[in-house]
Length: 468
Length: 51
Image 1 (cartoon, each protein chain N blue to C red):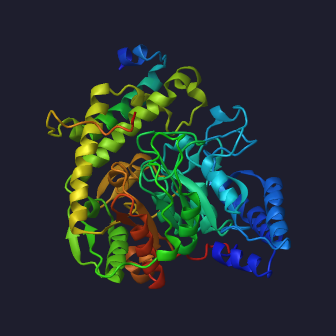
Image 2: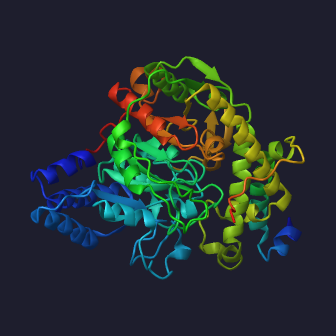
Image 3: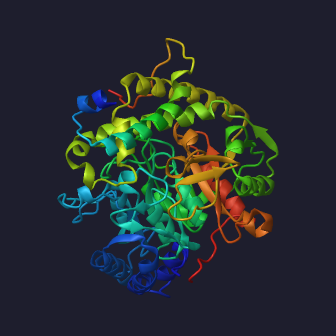
């Protein structure tokens, strides 16, 4: 099990360990565990070796080390990595020219001293919540290998949960950081829409796409987020805000007002998900339930926008290469490309109105709580999801609780809880359930501080995977 | 469905059309709340474009 990023940096700084030794441990762990988990689709050990050597050389010269010096990390394979074709989980992209340069966020982690060890598996073109990929295989859940890791950033969450890397990057359009973080039992941050530049990544839905980190500790998550921030004019959706560091302020302000989202978020949460929210609320002293009345409309708007933009993005290639697309999502993509324009415009208008309503909630509360998924990780191959007696198509419905939030761009930190450990009747012992810690726009600091409070209280945090 | 597929340039067999029809009906079912949502004429779409 690779250690926490903060420990790695400290040990490299004080000379207890070299970056090369850390990398050797990481590569050994990846080589022993990845065959059973299928997190990685490409390994970049030669590059990693060069990056680690550069860190050791810096230290040998007595120069200051950057904040993530020698920390191994990996990225969802929709990020450009110089010299590799950007797959975005798709066979149809495998023949594309190699990326000429790293994505800006990969370049920022490089500048922060982190060491890139590979690219991670995902649902094809990010259209899924399970990382059951017909071309590159299913990523298995480190806590129960018969279950999915979640998606679409399943490789990113599973690699961190299994201790292959302390930090990874993923993307979240409808829940693709929060759902796998929930299923794999790690922390994940979906920043405010527009906070981080998406340039150099394979897009899915420009209106909703967001990038963010995964980690096993909140300190590591915050350190990665701080290294990723900053304006980037190349992405028209990027808000061009200066870096607003959070690592030094992971403490909740006194008198913070926390609301528990009821209504839709209670209705579509099974008993384990409700229990996780209850545990988090109790630890944070939250007692008030609040109804986000337009949550169903927000979820539906996100669903329509996603289907239409995703379908439009791929229509030309679906016409000529339908058979090469993912069998689990290609019919959905085609159907999305047929959505009338009037539906999409209406969905974008609903989105703006719902956002206004949500801002009103933040007049009364600083933070909102909700489960990150309706259920714990389903078994691989699950077609129909049962939630409180109702049946839904599994792969399209695991984002029921995340979509209303990302539809309106709010920042969310997902914290992993273990509700089955405290209540055997839930029948999910040993399986995690994430809780969304939802802030007002640009208040990632509060989301992360709440996660840190849960971590310090011993309520949230990762567990060792089954084969460690 | 066949006309919409043809308009977009697709050519599919019957089984594929049936699967796409099922997927479209699921989208339509979810979309209904959006289509029925009351909005004032002045409400604008949430756009990213910033000239």
